[in-house]
Image (cartoon, rainbow over all chains, first blue to last red; front, top):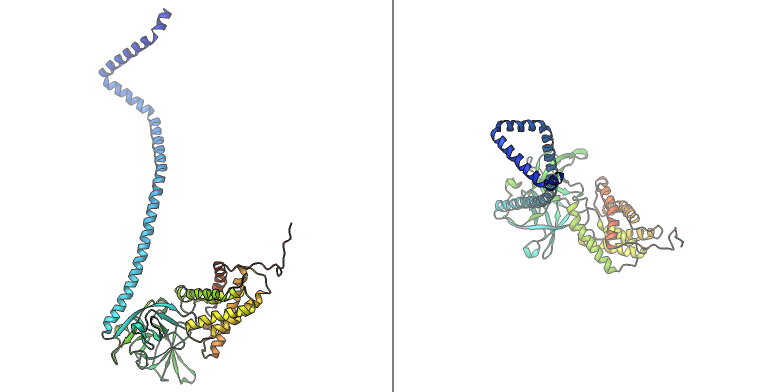
Length: 287
Length: 172
């Protein structure tokens, strides 16, 4: 008997399983509600474990996806950094273009405003190698009609004058140079004098007045008087920042802050010719 | 260090002069532009005899004066004396590619500024000493940093003069 069962054991088990499954299917088909209830009961019992597993699985999934994301993010970061660099350089270029545009608009405005004045735009290509003197070299020379003695201006005011001209370059002495002198006029009081350059380190000008009782005050605007051999009348020189009465009250001098920022000079205009007695419009410092 | 030929001096001075008039004014404000020619004169003089140092200084100063076109002789005289002085001093001190050029250039700057102020005063330029010397700290610092850097760039590394070296190494 034992040998028989042992021989047909697999068949018995298979038949038994089929029978159990058949009975189970038959029973569950009939008592569906109870089966669901049983299932619910089981689920309730094991739900904490299920939740824990789900949570664990979720976290592991997030962890795995995070690791995967790191590589993706690295690539994205690199791409974004490159884009940022590109935009930064574009922004820089834009700022330069805007600055240049503003400068050229100023020069264009000056040219329009001056009408019959003949101006020649020039770029500064180098500066004086010493610090004691203040000269710059521009890229326009006698070939372009530039000659010694011509005034050099920017929309902000007077820059200096050409002291020597070669075929393609010229040297301009800035008004800061210790050898520079300009006939000047205090616009408010109409007092006249000479504006002299000082040490370029100071970056200021000295206004030596002709009258000992000139009524000048800090804040007054000073322009060229037109009495100078080189500079036309009405070019803005700067603003008085202090007034000094010398010994015995015989002379009066003032310190002027130039209107032009000489550290930022790039493009200037050489005044090649101007109508006799003409003055610069007030917007550019004329009176 | 092999003695440099005049052609090399001219080329170096020209290069430094271009830096002086074209590049440095873009970095430093007007009036504060340091003297790179002084650094080169010190560097050359550190590798020459006093006589040749003087000629090198004269050449560099003259080039600077001609370039500026104002007061020709101001820098020529200053740098000729500087070249002589530095070359004379270097024969009596330890050689070093960094500290010695930097220190001598800084000291030279301190000597050159009052000297030039006095020369300018004689020439009729009565600058206020206080204003005149205001950029001096900037120039000293620049000279002390720029001179060894320039020396390194152009290959001015002095060979150790064994006869004059105070400390000698002995074979083990």
